Length: 452
Image 1 (tube, rainbow, N blue to C red):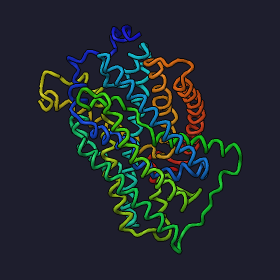
Image 2: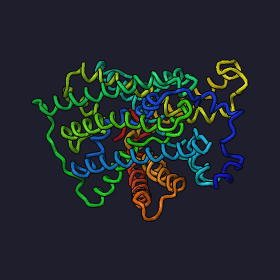
Image 3: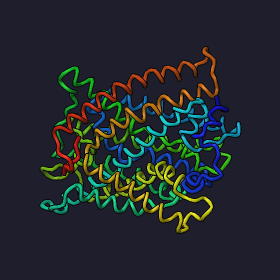
Image 4: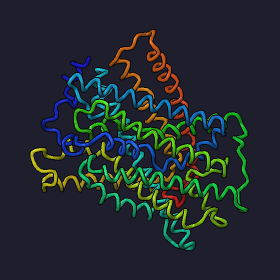
């Protein structure tokens, strides 16, 4: 099977003329650089939607799903690192998800399946990052100038312009210092928001705490699977092999260290944000907890300076997240558009890079302005994209690479995860798309508010 994949004309094993690999996915990093990249890819302002996800599950199921997703995703990514190590030891170092899947599974259609899903994920997250950044700017503006005339799409345009400039960083590896800053920022705004929630929950203006779920059984089921999809999207990271690509060879064992760093940050930030936000706002939690802390009517529920600082931290990290999730698109572009025989900043390579990356960012910014359904987009992306790539393929690739016996725990654990999350993915996709359609009927294009 592996031999057939290597002979496939669409397989990425020959890289002598591969500018995408040489320029965008250059391999110079250490394990802690991979940890920075992983943390930026997973620990982002989407954690501010965790109270919103809890409102569809309640306390018990919320904790259970958050913990289960954490355990399963760590296990999944660890298996992926083992598969990548296994292939590298066999002389086949893979730096792209699509080439890994095509090699291990020996299937030409798997190459196209992975690249389609991965592109959809990365584009969806890029759109979401621009949208959330625009919303953060709008929140600050509306508090500084309550009667101002600027609309959400105008703030999205501002963010898009900044992203166009930042998109010119030539390689994934060149983002390592930005992503270290991103890791620190995630701690900064998480603990600021936790402090704000504690202040709000204990103040005289504390909102009434109601943790009840939807009244009808059917609505509760749909809400629960939508929430599960959101949590899957928050934990999701569909570009793991591309992150390993930034590691200087040999990469064996380094990705596991990066994962431990990343999940330490996850433990400290995810639970604190989910618990504090849901404790205060219950079933009234907004898809962006910052908007709950700064309601349209009435005073802010925490010191304005604290919330303003948190929003600035969120804004800065969103720029890093947008850069990370754009790397696969840039790699695909430069694999065909760049000339590996000329310098990365040569006129021949610089001009196409500026044009293509700018057009991609403009495309993402346009859709962010046109369809401001952040919570819904997260749910759809989680169900359709992250669940198959993060909860199904890694287990399948491990089973194909290591071939555990049917009597081994790994065989049964992996197959159980595949079956359970395939079912969850179908149900989550149906419920999240249903909610997106319902919201799309109620709100206009280029709305001035992000839809919950």
